Image 1 (cartoon, rainbow, N blue to C red):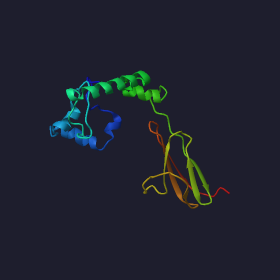
Image 2: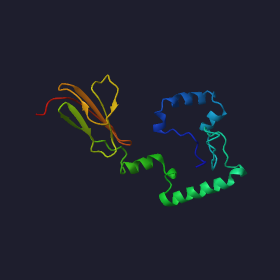
Image 3: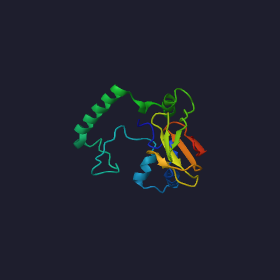
Image 4: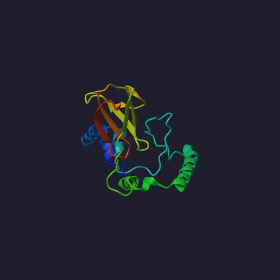
Length: 180
């Protein structure tokens, strides 16, 4: 989509802490040529880079005759991909997200974690497929990714966060007690 700029104000991208800094430098005209290209109003129809010799993809080789055969091979593979799977690149981002959200304007909510406490061990599961589970014993601690049962004591506080990408996260907090 050469008619679209490289940079677009996408909510997810704007969450990156580096973006406000880059936007400020761009507005002040302080980016070098390669950095400024990110904010160009259009882009080439095709791009081809030798990532071994140019890992930052500064030199577009698409118009270089020495790479015409490779470009034709990749173009054919891309066309086959589109035929097999469709072109989500042509779909508006919010429209694509709504398909994930089953037509709604708001994301689904990740299910709360199911918490088991027995014999001094905590087990956590989440009914939402592919959800990640984070936990901590104090609101001052960093979150830990749940990878298996961990030790706890009756009376401990437990904070549990479940999250699946594209879904709203859910956090619960409890005070552990025996379930005998």
